[in-house]
Length: 150
Ligand code: DQA
Image 1 (spheres, rainbow, N blue to C red):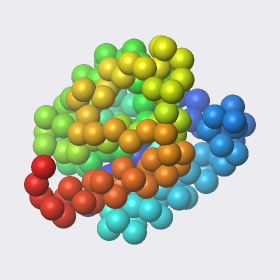
Image 2 (image 1 turned 180 degrees about the vertical axis):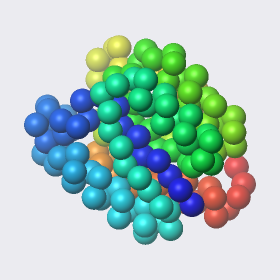
Image 3 (image 1 turned 180 degrees about the horizontal axis):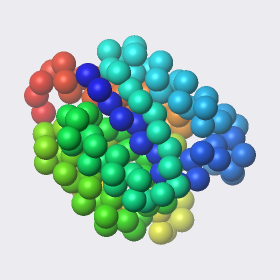
Image 4 (image 1 turned 90 degrees about the vertical axis):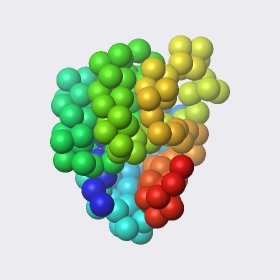
């Protein structure tokens, strides 16, 4: 089962960027861990990152066309990108799973981070557990597919 693990702007700067919030590990570390966790859950994952909104929109279209499930960290796009929301909605409307993830807990941070325009069209959200948010999201996808029920 194929899963695209898509990451938005500034996440390529992990380890350098606000390590007190996002930790000391790099995006390459995240890629390595997420790929291994997917394997443990019996999933075949591909990890990508871009700072470009249009590119994530295209990747979400690709997920729909390829029948791939999605783990999405929309980063700052979470809070205002209706084009990302509309693209994410196509994934879940196609019957595919889309889990929104965040490394930090946006609800415990600035007011502008309390709104997610993606959350309402996601299958579910995991936030606040560091890189483990991705592990939990992958386990949730595997669990849902195994149970084949809501
Ligand atoms: C983030 C939280 C967002 O508010 C922020 O803009 C990010 C990262 C997270 O993973 O905690 O860039 O999505």
